[in-house]
Length: 263
Image (cartoon, rainbow, N blue to C red):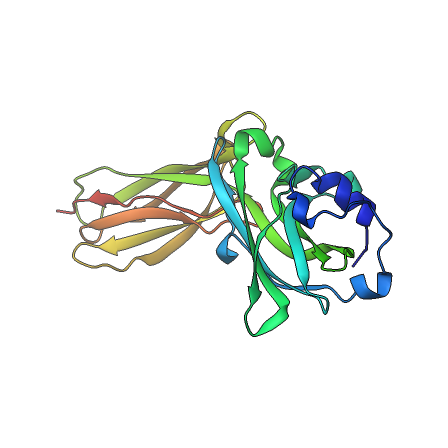
């Protein structure tokens, strides 16, 4: 936890209504400001933020701010980097004040929310931004003490993945070999398109005609350019698909099943 009244005023003067800004940037009472706490920080409903090359979406941050003096205003934003001063990613660039509601049962506690417009083309200009991000949360109490916590929570940004499948020949005689091919690609934020994802395990699954359940057949590792190729024996009519479970920097993907008629 850090108390930084001057920094907060500098960053937020354009975003805060005049009613919550102090007339001057007075030095904070450290003891009082340190009583401000942040909890229940949730980003994007607890789900990963998965972006394609040009994806645009709205990401919501919710949190609880608590201070013995009461909370006059609170804010939060996402950042990525070794520290806030050297952050190589920040969303939004100019953080607005969150919308906070004081608890009717406890005037020292407020629940807050802010929505952020995220654009892959604008906000994630290199692939190194995939992975863990942090949430900075801050608050101003009713005595004009300002507090910020650099890591009040975390969020996960991932590159969108796509996997395809093709099973042939079709139709095929029972007992003959079926060749299953496909390709795994993922969003490349630096060039704004999808590129092959090599050396990743992908599972081949099969669903019998008339069933709703897929079963695992084997694992296949992607080759150059993310290519996939394997074989299996034709036993009965059904659907073949590849499933990629994802990584810490890349989202999961499941191909639409490809039907093979076995005669």
